[in-house]
Length: 185
View 1 (cartoon, helix red, strand yellow):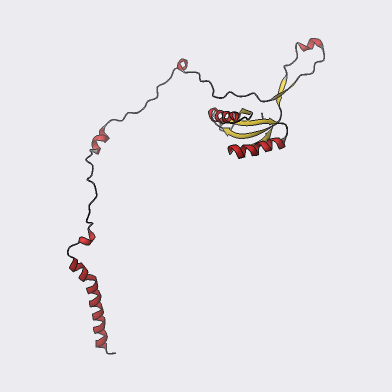
View 2 (cartoon, rainbow, N blue to C red; view 1 turned 45 degrees about the vertical axis):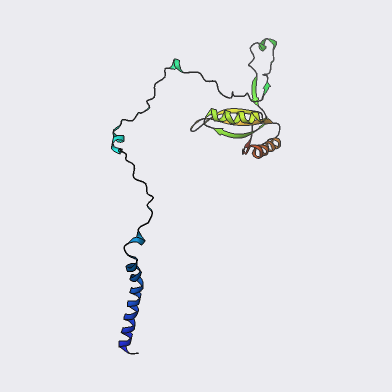
């Protein structure tokens, strides 16, 4: 092909492509296609933000309470006494009975620990809920690195197998995953 013919074809292609791009813009008129026809934007609110910033804010100040004004609150759930086995100290002489040590009590049985809480109110709430469902519950106060904790215990049971079955039932009925422990205290 001739060099002049190549230049003419290239020029014609460029002119046609420019015509395809710019002729619709010229024939449509002003920039109507870029501006939305319906304006549904509400007017801006007429607020004075500086006036709100200058207003003093009220701050709640704690009022100290005198010790004699504090009300004594009864716990929602009282700590239940765990099952205990009484063992008497051996008595060798009748006159030593008056001076004998009181009976010592030890915890017996297997328990399912279903929760450990840093607040007694939370532990007592779970204990009360389980007690209403018919379970024998106890709260056990213990000391941890971060302070006091209350454990919610269900039991006692005579064997570990019975306690494990109870743990499975608690998981199934109340979605509580417990651990089986022996003689807490």
